[in-house]
Image (cartoon, rainbow, N blue to C red):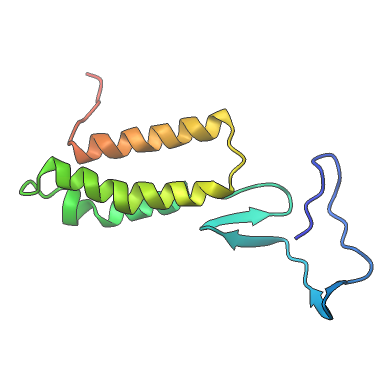
Amino acid sequence: MLQPSPSQTVNVPPSPIIINHTEIKTVEKFCYLGSTVTNSGSLDTGDAKASADFGRLSELLWQDHGRRLSTKIAVYRVVVLSALLYRSETWTMYLWHIQQLEQFHQRCLRKICNINLQVL
């Protein structure tokens, strides 16, 4: 993948790149560590995937009143949080990424603890 500086446009080289007699193909995007990286610099942050991971456990675990809170938190950390943080390894971390991660984390914890923040 060719990734120019922000002020430049993507230009495919006129001749192919060859290493050890193998032509390297150029692509516009690829999946790395669970995130989609594009040559324009945009990045799928993986929030939707983490949300889906969390949602799949909703009926099975989060809404089960017979499970201890410590068990729910341990499963959340292992399944959801570790997958999200693994995906975040590809990000260039900006303040808004950190804020998004924190908001997602707090939403999940409130749901696990069955805390509703509706304003009356």
